Image (cartoon, rainbow, N blue to C red; front, side, top):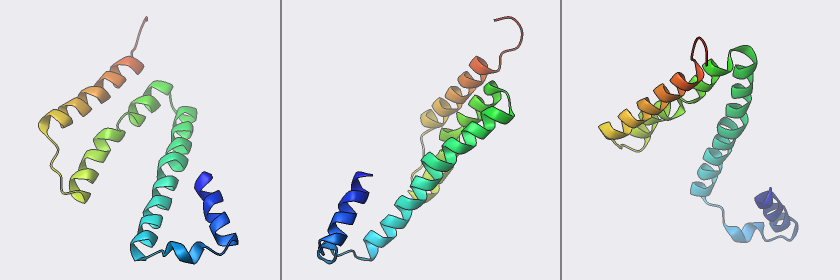
Length: 107
């Protein structure tokens, strides 16, 4: 919200051209907009849909798989090979969430 106010003030006062938005800034703005849409907006909305349509334990387990799904994305986009320790830790975290939230029987 704050940056929207700053951009609006720059546009109103005629200082928007002084910022000198280059191609790199436009590309970064597109990535920022996509990240804002897919992260907080779409991610939270889909998690609410999941808790509404399934058991909370199943939804929590699915939502906990985010780090597992991000490991291949980071490996491809950043050309970074995750360590076996990072992969094992991520899998252990998801397994822990599954154990906590999907128990059967008496508590």
